[in-house]
Image (cartoon, rainbow, N blue to C red; front, side, top):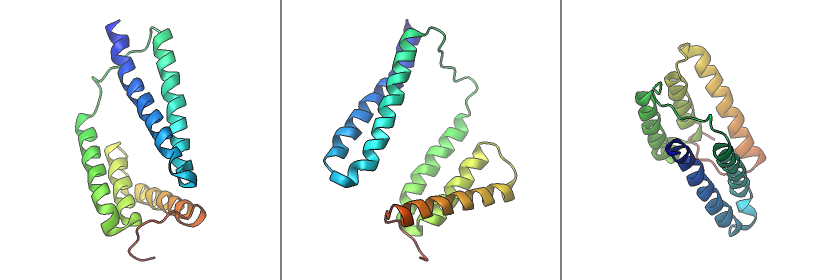
Length: 141
């Protein structure tokens, strides 16, 4: 029973956060549609995980093979990303973040990684800046 309680902790926290996001996003009017969709997806996912954890006995969380150093570096990289985002712009900060995270995941080919990150960043830039008209900080554009 203790294992089930531990396994339920994160999904319940995410379920509560999703309800908060959904309620808060409604007060933003049309600008709140994207956060509402994210909150709804999180609500469905965490609700499904709660139900699965309650009714299945084979779920077990095992952190013995975790790369805690990689997790720590990723968290520090995300914090740096938050602070650098407005200062050096979306494109440069996102390429740096993507490159570091892919490297932490163990992919060694720096050339392929950089190409992939640049293409993914350019595509996401086009989607948010051009299609969705979301203002993104840039240095050059």
